[in-house]
Length: 303
Image (cartoon, rainbow, N blue to C red):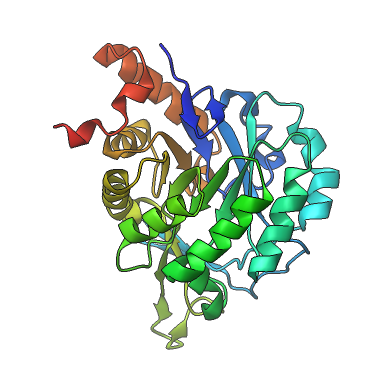
């Protein structure tokens, strides 16, 4: 069987990746799985300077999912390069760094710095976090601003550039086209959906931030639908994500149009979720007598 896929110029040994923000910097899961088994490790979102994130409480469970308002807490790019990259270099896998900024200039500076580091194989732009300040979300919801920031970063790096799209828009196909036209090599579809939970006793939101990002199985049908629509709208590869818990879920995304999948919330419940899903995909291919996993991408469109 050929499990390899291509995401722009990136060659992945298989289509299973981690979703940013759910896998730390890789070290946290290394005692549970061999990171070299994965197609790619996507690390927690990074900014030029360290960020403390939002005040607690920052996580609340919901029906078939969870809300998080971590607020992109991270150790900053320089500390990541100094302390985390040497560890990641010891594994035979692609390292993709998720990054963000509070301005176009910050996005560009972050991309330039990360692009100079040996051992980083691709960049994922987060323009769509639903639990930061409202003004920040304009990067992922205003087509003009999206085009500007993606275009600026495209000029700043030669690494494969993945843009993580927000589902909190009227037409995700339009945003996908804008990002692709501005230079994205691939698209991550989708980030979390904005949600809220209210405590009926205190009569206040359970999150200190009031709203947060909804993830987990509850959002999977929405995510699959959006991958399906984006596949019809653009030619660049899609990384599907949103509530993938089992191999069957991952295959659903691939059939909808994803070239690869990213496993997120499942990592919190089962630290071996990524490799379990990979084994399940292999078993499916044997059962269905499929030689190349890439032939499954978008197959639902021909049905």
